Image 1 (cartoon, rainbow, N blue to C red):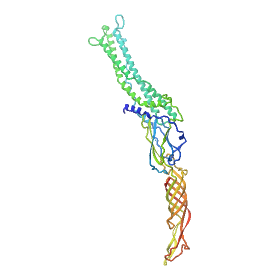
Image 2 (cartoon, rainbow, N blue to C red):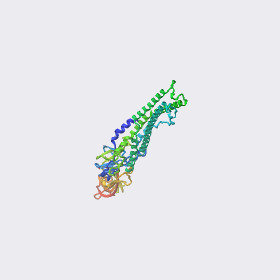
Image 3 (tube, helix red, strand yellow):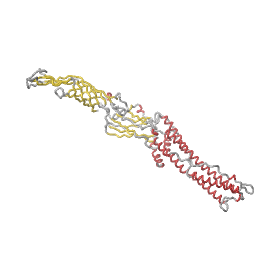
Length: 530
């Protein structure tokens, strides 16, 4: 990943920061939106946000809900985090459902950088000092060569101190960065138990990030100045050697007067001084790149530090007051109002620092329709009204005289019917065995009771004219169980004709159908009318 591009993206996207949101008072008393039983009143869809940082939990999800047409609703994210900004997008479509039937990215970004390079300095023994050289003039004072060597040695010590100071600054900043990164990894989350937990985490993150950004790093100008000083040290040593070299080019100050010990001391000091210059140059060579690397990873944390500064009160203080009116860990996302629509609600949450999506989009469907109150159903009935048909049959042989008889009879009959059911909203309820939030209800969710009336088609009374049903229904989603009265008819002879009577051939005895009431049971499939 290109660090510069990432940093620019982080800074450019910071404008989407989230703040503590005022809690609308009218949502506090709102009931939870149900899966299938909408009420004509405001409701809320509560989603518990689990901590998905470091893959602790899966992304939160929610079941589909039913909302009364035109009613207001809101998505409430609880145990959330102000370190992510969430938005709600709605995509309405035509109704299709049978109404009666969930800092990971920020931390990951930081983890990609790892820790900056280590200090490459190699421990060395104490430098040789010109004070060890015994070289005096006629007055018994230090000779000129020794005085120059002492001055050069002082300049070398100043350069070494400058190099050490720069690496000490770098090392201190690496320690600050390591501490801040560990704090962010531990405390930058997308879910907090409550506002107090967030405030404690935010204060610690702000404290460590502030320390990291306050401690200075060696500037480019300072590094340039020190490098120039080291180069000057090297040139001064070259000039010293040239000034006090013999004809063979070896360092041999004349003031040593041929004293081998004096000459060897000068040469040993000079050789050590050259090594010190080389060592300083080798230490300064990787410093610019490592300082730049550390600045790059610091820049990745800058948006988080800026967000904490802007959202603290007073601004930049690192204090995050807790207020019931403006909770940190509860997010309210008002839903648009629709009628007779199926709306896909999509909740997207992004890190306030990186603007990277922190977990999968939370989606659920909201069905803006009232619960069905009127149904037309068709089904089969068991009626205790006996089936009875009469007619003429052949009598006994050999005469085979026509005989009046019962041609069809049974104590129970099965007949089809069409029923109109009424079950207003107050007679619709969640089935006792159903549980909200289970997503799958194999035995039904919506139960209802109410009056039912309709027509039965009785083919067992010698005609196909309709009869009547009056009773009550118990519904489970689309299934309806009915019990009530069957107002039906049975057939018998009229005008003095009776069963068992013989009649002349070709005679058609008159019949009539008498009305009666008997218990009936039915089962039907509902077709919602509304």
